[in-house]
Amino acid sequence: MKAITSPDLASLEAIQAKLDAELGYPFEGADIGGGIHAPPEQSRTLRRVDIIKHPSLDQWALPVDQGVAAALAARADAAATATTGGAVKAGGAVLEGWPAPVDVATPLGDALAAADLGPDWDQKAGPVP
Amino acid sequence: MNRRSGRRPTRYSSSAIWTPKSISGLQLWLRADLGITIGTGVSAWADQSGTGDANKNVTQAVAGLQPAYSTANAGLNNQPALSFTGSQLLQSGVWASALPQPLTIMVVGRLTTAGKYVCDSINGAVQCGMFDSANTLQVYAGVQRPTLLTSDGTKFVIIAYFNGNASNHYPMAYTSDNYGGIGPGTNGLTGVTVGCYAGGGAFSGSDIAEMAYWNRALTPMEAKSLLNYAGARYALTIGP
Image 1 (cartoon, rainbow over the protein chains, first blue to last red):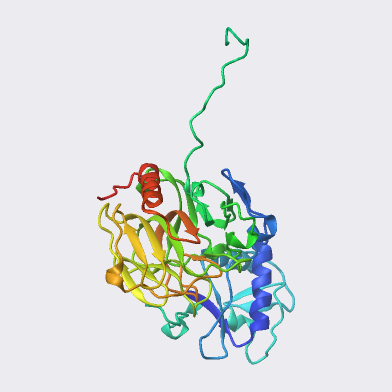
Image 2: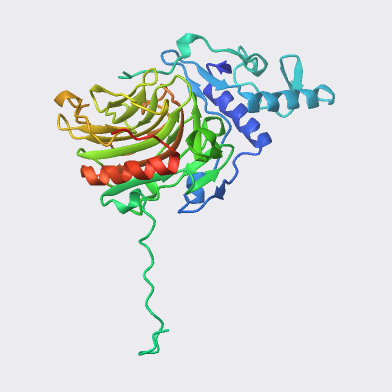
């Protein structure tokens, strides 16, 4: 699984909020079939992916699935032709409007580079037979 | 018209359609043609048991974790089903009333890829459910016990009664098996996870069409009715 990793949860949450807004989240579900349906507050889709924490390190990861990758690519394409001032750089693309880096030593541009999560990120734990 | 009384004759219709809801003690009933809400995949699958506890609805607010929905699953007699392919899950809230043992779980589905938990509790430390181990469904409520699929390939209807060492199950057959008197543990549940281990991970590779939970043992006749219902609805071969 590819993901954007960072030791700074707040900046990943800011990125996630931006991505979700661009992808149209949250949105209401559509009831189909018969029977009793769950109320809207239970059936709403709130976000594309969940931020996950490293099992032992103080490190966080925003999974980059197809939906997130498409949003990143679209934003990079749009930014590539835009005239920007003081925008954040990410992977060579200028991403205007992204949240400012929280930590100068770990600029958002670096954090936006998605990489494969290693096996140490495996979330499986507990008494799984 | 009745010539003597002038009234229309009373019409006796056949009894209502038989479903798992016809068996008393039903605590949760999920069937894939009822109560489905689509987000990206299935964002909610609502309980049809009629107990009125909205925390029994199983939901998923994250698009990337929602199972896909099929209105006609070719492997389950073209009935609707939810597809779990290794990274999807639905989970209920905490039920208003816990469901301790004795309890009975019925699950109808099809194993599609290597995976683990078809269903579980919502507490990773107090598990109660079924998982797949190389196309062998096993029940688990603290102790691992095999529930062999005896026919029909990877399609299954399993009725598992959890009651400590008095537990038994109907593995695609009218004849129950008691695991040799060594049960799958004593855990009950306070909610349900569908598609993975209650603590996260150990995802399922399966299509799930129907699940039901009761707060008691089913009689052999009730189990037979349930097997007949599932066999007819999902074109499953039920053994002797």
